[in-house]
Amino acid sequence: MAPSQCQKNNKRNYHTITMLGKTTEYSIRALVYIYLQNKAGARPGFKEIAKNIDSPEEFTGKVLQLIARAGLISSLKGRGGGFFFDDPEKPLSLVKVMEVTETHDFFHKCGFGLKSCDADNPCPMHDEYAVVRDSFFELMKKLTIQSLATKINQNKAVLNRLEIV
Amino acid sequence: MAPSQCQKNNKRNYHTITMLGKTTEYSIRALVYIYLQNKAGARPGFKEIAKNIDSPEEFTGKVLQLIARAGLISSLKGRGGGFFFDDPEKPLSLVKVMEVTETHDFFHKCGFGLKSCDADNPCPMHDEYAVVRDSFFELMKKLTIQSLATKINQNKAVLNRLEIV
DNA sequence: CCCTCAAAAGATATTCATATCTTTTGAGGG
DNA sequence: CCCTCAAAAGATATGAATATCTTTTGAGGG
Image (cartoon, rainbow over all chains, first blue to last red; front, side, top):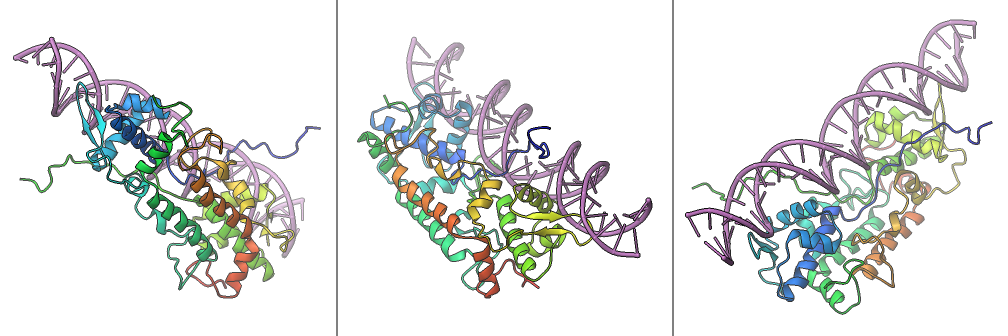
């Protein structure tokens, strides 16, 4: 007798929860790195950035194009080129990043999947879900590239396994 | 002069935030529907379920196979067949559903995307992100198919635009 | 003015989540 | 015992997110 009489089924499970997509993660990590390097007088390129935030090089380049096109940072081509903030001390919230990298209605959708769901016609988890979703929203509004960078400068957090040089 | 001198760029934005994937959404809605129908003495099939929870028919069938294989519900083939709970009053939390439909480590991952991130070596949003993530976890543990169904029975919420017959 | 460097842009590849279609299995009724 | 009905299983299709590769553009140095 075989050890299992269940039908062989190699199907993977389905969805993977990710509050933030890879594009957003790389964007935030890259922006923090750029900010830190800018303060140190440098202007990193995407390959250097990718190495330091542990992300795929070419894709990081693409993501930074997106971020630059959106005006969150500037870039310069050629020798000595790279990415940099025009106004490094202007607070850049994570929500602003998400507006570039995530689809629009992120913080207003029903957690239950209903097309229309509001206080008048709520889904059965409407109120309680909204609390969680809104607290995430508030957090993303509150956190900024600068505040994250500060934590790293104070050695209260890391950008990666590595120390930033 | 053209109204825009920006490069034409029809690229869509990237990721779409979804706390729960479609598979999970359909699973939860379907289970609530099945529970309500069971209590009314019926044993719905996947086509009926899909119609009532507004989900794609065939895919809903697939999802219910997954849920049934995991043992959360039973099913019967043939005339009078359909899906049903073996023990309808045994509370079934949404986390239990997610364990089937979402990948394993959902509530323990770093929101910043670091491979290792903990209190000793935190990412710069570790503490605050953990609060949000954990409150979502608690909610999913607290909510059950039965509690959602009760809200619907009390007309305090809807499963869909439609009323359940 | 040319040469090199680095980002921008464009094209293509891969994987996963979602979705649909077809064939097989099994339960019950006539 | 056969016939029908409904789920299970298997195969395939589509779109989005992620990833890589190649070509073009533009800035600066020699």
